[in-house]
Image 1 (cartoon, rainbow, N blue to C red):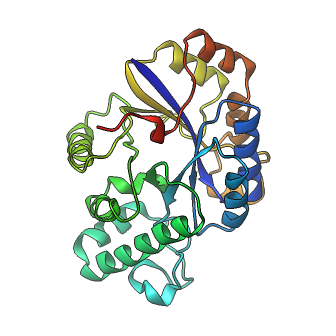
Image 2: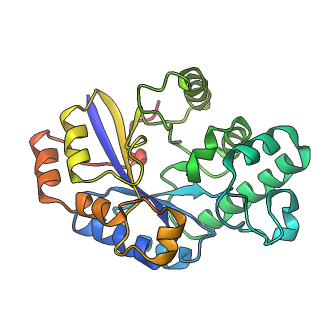
Length: 269
């Protein structure tokens, strides 16, 4: 059995991303979005989500390459002199593993982001993290600790074979998620083509789709603003928006008998 989830990450980052999410959902095949609750345009994203009841919205935890939801003084071990998270993913991961203060602040910040999502009044469809930082065992542990309180039912697994080096780690992650009674995707399509999941790439992936749950993840925007180009200089955000609203993509899905769903549509374990 084949199932597909078409997700847009970074919902709330800016108006251009929010506009693309809405357009890709109402005029295309986008079925889900991952919300950054502390991002500059989060309030606008929440308002759009509330008028798009069929859009499945999840929490996109932001712990690197962004700013905390809590005042920087409350999570000092996570921020720099500007009050922002580090852009160095490796250094952040090492710090979270060895520093008890960092782990304490992570719990506070992650809890605050879960609380903010619930306060928005949107049903939680899934959880993942910006730059896939929930691969980190500490972050995943905190997500699982919060699962019952915040009704977490699904967590993204950033797996796209072949991933020989990460395969044992991903297997451990998958086992932890399943033992917690949560659902997950089997494959994350576009991981190797992050920011470049264009029409041709989507059509090719659909032609080679394997059994199981395949999540396609995108980073669309209606314009390549200077801020977006600075954040990810090589992303083809307009090309990804075109893929999501492409008639050939919609037709290929229909021919395959597939309709994009959300994680919440998956049967419970």
